[in-house]
Image (tube, rainbow over all chains, first blue to last red; front, side):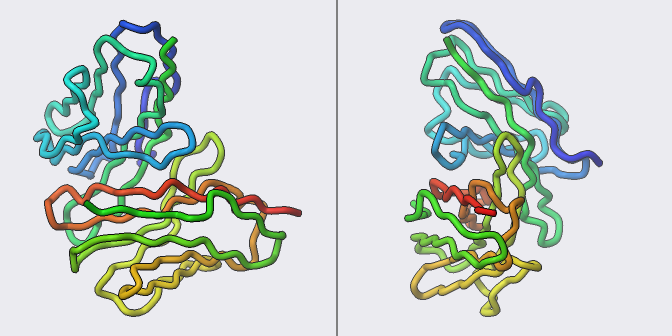
Length: 115
Length: 116
């Protein structure tokens, strides 16, 4: 397994446009997380999936944000009508709920710049 | 809500020497995990070391060890024999199985510089 992958790695968009990011977790991991990291800060939790079910969403996730995980495999995070404040690194992580595996493995992130 | 505080925005160490990064946390839960993650410049975050709250013994991983003081809610990371490759942002993080998601709560990070 090659680990968690994210695409694209970088995205530059104009304010008001929609963007979509993709995360492919480690294949046997049933849990998937999205975090947002702004410059000089630690990552902040956005949302969590167990299999295909979205079980928790942060208050940071405004109505312009939506995430899906069809069939419990890859996940997408869409931001509609982007704002300059959405500029950040978007990180995806996955883990397994079996046994005592609670470690989250992170992808390289998608850096979003809204101009 | 749980919070994680890293009071040292930046630290530096000479190669081959030892450095300790500080972390405190606040929680009312009894069952939780603590982690140190390393984020090198422009590279992805990787787990350095983890500690289960119910374990009294401090975790160690090669040159990395922690000092877990549960009563004081303190979780520091000691890096021995520092190497140039240790230079990175280090994040302390907390998670708890209560609530189901085990989402990570991160501190703001400490930037570690290793001087040759």
